[in-house]
Image 1 (cartoon, one colour):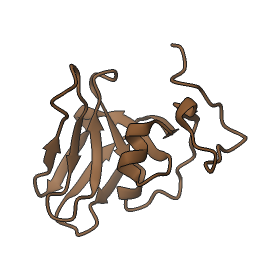
Image 2 (tube, rainbow, N blue to C red):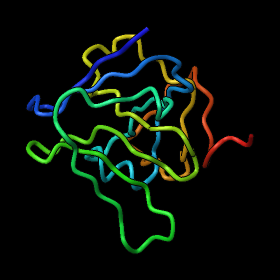
Image 3 (cartoon, rainbow, N blue to C red):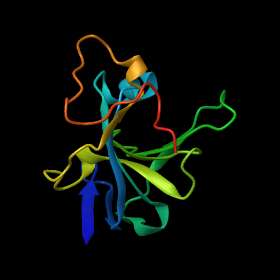
Image 4 (cartoon, rainbow, N blue to C red):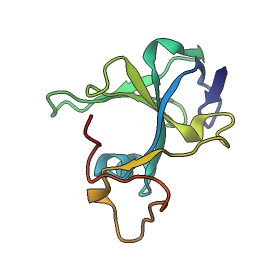
Length: 135
């Protein structure tokens, strides 16, 4: 199955093919910066199944980190599309809000709950972890 998505203004469009490796909520401080304060709802997909079909994204990576994440976003509207994360080689972490249809999203876990704020609620039915689950 193929999925499609875009940024807010439509300058960037993308598509990717299954499989979806995981669906998660992340409560870490970095994700809360990027989401505006709430948990980050994301899926993990294979990098080689993902392609931009319209536009070229801007990228950002912090220069003060040894292994920074590379963030892909729209240079016009600023929508954050996905992340290339060193702990997940060959994978991308895609923001579900950019999908054309994300009604099927059902998080399988909540990670970095150690950073969760008192106003944030973790769905009771999903496993949650202080950091990340042990492999």
